[in-house]
Amino acid sequence: MAENRILSVRDLKTHFFTREGVVRAVDGVGFDLAPGQVLGIVGESGCGKSVTALSILGIVDHPGRIVAGRILLRPARGGPPVDLAGLDPKGRRIRSIRGGEIALIFQEPMTSLSPVHTIGQQVSETIRLHRRRGRRQSREQAVEVLRSVGIPDPERGAKLYPIQLSGGLRQRALIAQALAGEPRVLIADEPTTALDVTTQAQILDLLRDLRKRRGMAIILITHDLGVIAEMADQVLVMYLGKGVECTPVDRIFHSPEHPYTRALLSSMPGLGAAAKQALPSIAGSVPPAFRRPSGCSFHPRCQEFLEGSCNRTEPEPVMVRPDHEVLCLRRGPNDPAGHSPPDELSENGHFVSKPDTLSRNRTPRSRIKKRRD
Ligand SMILES: Nc1ncnc2c1ncn2[C@@H]1O[C@H](COP(=O)(O)OP(=O)(O)OP(=O)(O)O)[C@@H](O)[C@H]1O
Ligand code: SF4
Ligand SMILES: [Mg+2]
Image 1 (cartoon, helix red, strand yellow):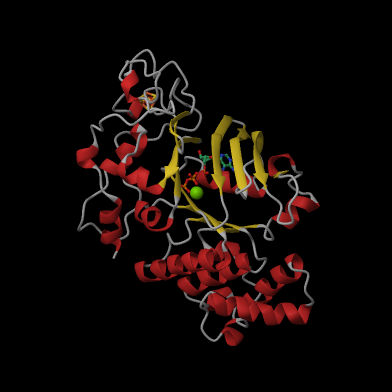
Image 2 (cartoon, helix red, strand yellow):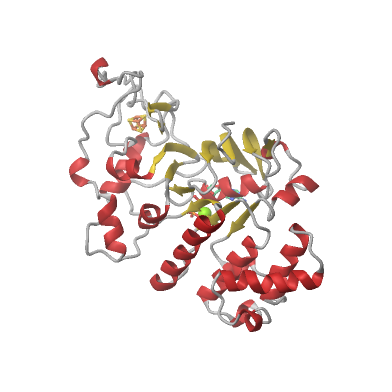
């Protein structure tokens, strides 16, 4: 694990062993996260984004479990990384990491906040548990945390129950609860999907500010490519449980390599579309969880499908640039169609992107940003 990484996930696999068969919800996901970095995870519904988050925190529902891979967390006090995938999900170590080192904000605040405790009680309980403060001090600090996330009149707000707050304030309360343990990594799973555009912008501003002030690393899961363009430094694109492309955000919008990423971007509407754009739909549909296509699982929908290769051989990750990983047989020097002549290899031996046939359809990052303003 590199020194400047806080979290490194390697070939993570989490499967659900149901009566109907095995659902390979996460089936080969990897990424690195540095302090203060925002990693955006994007992909269609059911591709394994939330199960990846739940796996990191060791809270995958029965009948699911991590079957392979490593989740390496660098401890705050130094020392060798801890492999979260190897910890007992009910043990003391992961319970102290959960909420203390890594916190999760779910999409729907009402299901995550207790309806029978006030906001102040919930935030101060997290402070008491993870920062080991007394009850009185926890209560005082809870008010400060509520203030820091923009709850107006936090002394009064602390005494309110979730049902008494608006959607935006509930989401702020949830963020306050997540921050109360002073985590180094915040996982935000669709944190703004249920909110109106103005509140969404305020919550994103808040996350941006927290990252700047606290150097907190954020894993941001979203359907919204506009949010990715605005917030992320690095992007992981997922399809059917696998990470299919991982690279810095500009590259996702300006020179995407994976046919799935290209299809997502080329099906995005242009300027003038509604500011809040869900992940666009692309041709075909995601196959049922139990019937995974042979070879490359994207092949029934892929524009660059090659008979005899794509439907037979499972792709291995290829580094098309030093910081750009792609899971596609037709990228890199071993393209079975022979579309990658040697003169497209750079000096350091990495494949350099070939002319992009979809470039005419791409939506530049700046346009996506503008569209949201
Ligand atoms: N408890 C469970 N039992 C069986 N299968 C499950 C369970 N939880 C999730 N899955 C399956 O795992 C796969 C990945 O689900 P996940 O919730 O991670 O998708 P997602 O990418 O977060 O989708 P969305 O964008 O809709 O939130 C899906 O096929 C889902 O049906
Ligand atoms: S391996 Fe083949 S089917 Fe899969 S994404 Fe690449 S070109 Fe498409
Ligand atoms: Mg989800």
